[in-house]
Image (cartoon, rainbow, N blue to C red; front, side, top):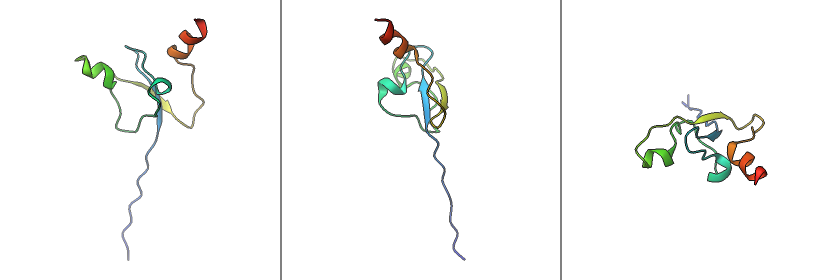
Length: 70
């Protein structure tokens, strides 16, 4: 009998509450293991991303709200 493993990779919309970077600006969705903002980490901070599943409707991000206001 063959042993098979299924790997489920969920993708997430994300936005950093500190710098505002989001999947819209980054151009890619986050994977399960993407928890901290890579841009803030480069500045020496560990900031947890605000994430929601990619199959849920996208929330308007701060970046999109700023772009509409400009």
